[in-house]
Every structure is written in C-alpha cells, then in structure tokens.
Image 1 (spheres, one colour):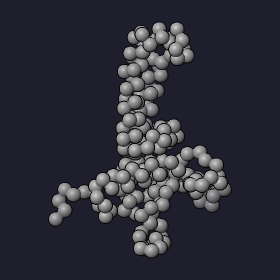
Image 2 (tube, rainbow, N blue to C red):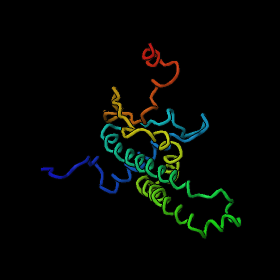
Image 3 (tube, rainbow, N blue to C red):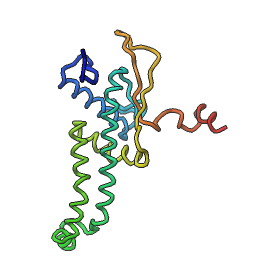
Length: 189
C-alpha cells in the first residue's frame, strides 16, 4: 500500500527527481529572458515549456512556490526603500548613513528580501533563473493571489514512447492575449 507516499516517482531516485524538478523550473523561468530572435537555444514562445503531463504536474508547485516567495521578497524590498539612502557608495554621506540608525532599520527591513532570494536560489539551483524571477516574473504577478501557471494537455502523444505531453506556461503568456488573435477578437464582440 502507498500510505503517506505522495507525489510521483517518475522512474528516478530521489536526488534525480529533485534535479529534474529544479531543471524544469529553471527552464520555464529562463524562457522569459531577453535574447536575440535567431540565437541558438532561444525559446519559441516566452513563458512556456513542453514536457510530459506527470512532470508538468510535479513541477508546477515548485514554480508557484518560487513566485510566491519572490513576491514576498519584493514587498519587503519595497518597504526597505523608505530607509535607504541616495548617496553614492563610499561617499561621506553614505558612510554616515552606514553608521547611523537608518542603516540598521534598512538592514532589518531588507532581511526578508535577502532570505527570499537565497531560498529561491536554493529551490531552483540557478542564480540566473532567480534573477529573472525577481526582475521580470514576480512584478508581473504582484497583484495576483495565486495560480501563476497552467497546464494544457496536448492531443498528440510523444513520438517513440507515446508519452502524454503537456504545455506548462505562465498565466498571461497564452496566444489569446496577442493582438489580432481570433479568440481575443471573439471575446471583444
């Protein structure tokens, strides 16, 4: 019996499962980076990857958890900006601010933001993906309470082993939101 054994094994050892989920989550986040259109390895559609359905169902909570952590970190960083200085680093005004109580208040308010960045790097295993998460993706979902991703099943199975495929994408990156799309035009009528 499988009592208290949640999750899918995906035919891998536990360490391989963690590595797989990290790589899939990082791959989804890295599709949002700015690249030249003809550059090798560029994503065909931003914010979307194609994988098998069980893998998509397993990686979705990891991605959503990372986005939630990043949103909380951005809120903490915004609160810390009230205590920040505008002086250049190393200047006399900056050194005075650094020794005063304002810096302590800034450091206290900034601690959750630093913790959030470290936690997302730990979950993703990729600093570049964490940077994209904090700079591009988390601000986009700042007002959304949850449900940042969706899974769409594909009709055609994978060639070779007939594995059921799915698209894992960020909400808001679908083709229906593009100008001139037939679905968008139908919704406007």
